[in-house]
Image 1 (cartoon, rainbow, N blue to C red):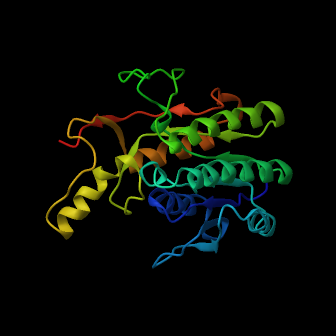
Image 2 (cartoon, rainbow, N blue to C red; image 1 turned 90 degrees about the horizontal axis):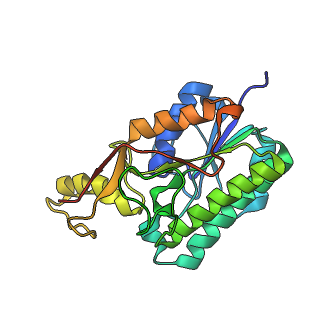
Length: 248
C-alpha cells in the first residue's frame, strides 16, 4: 500500500495547528504538509505557503508531494465573514471547489472539510437537532457551508469523490487562539481575563450555542476519515454534538 501523504489547508488556524500535530503523530513528520497564507512562530512540521485562491500553487503542492488526502480547513469564519460577505463567499466556496476539482483530476483518495452549526437557523429545532432538518443560515459563512455540503454530495454522486464532513460546534481548546468565529468568546474570554482582567462578549447573555472540546473534535475527525468508505452514509455532513451553554 502506498504511503499516505496529507495536505492541510488553513493549517495555522485554531483547528489546523492541533490537527496537524495529530496527523504528524499518526503518519510521520515528512508525510504531513501544512499550508497557510502565513507562517507562525515555532512552526511545526513541513510547511508551504498557500493562498487557497491560487489554484496553480495548489496543483504544484499536490503534484510535488504526491498528496493522497486533503484536510481542507482554509476559510473565513462566521463573525469575520460578515465584514466582507463577497470575499467570504469567494474564499469559502470557490476555495472548496478548487480542492474538489483538483482532487478529482489528481485521483486524491479522500477529502475532509468541516461544515458547521452555522448551517442551522431560526427554523431549525434547537433541541435534539435532527440530521436532516431545515437549513436556513443567517450568515454568509453558514450559507457557504450549506452550499459546500451540497457540492460534497454532488461530487460524490457524480464522480465518486470521497468527501467526508462533520458539522462542528464551537470548539473550545487551550492550544491555540480563536480565529473569528461566533462561538470564539468561549475561548477568548480566558485569554482576555489573563491579559486585561475583563471581557466584553458581543453575544447576548442568554444566547445558547453548541460547543465541543478540541480533543473530542480531533477524535471525531480522525475516526470519520479512518472509517471504511461504505460506512459513510451522509455525503453532505454529519451532525456532531457535545454540550451547549450561554455566555452568562
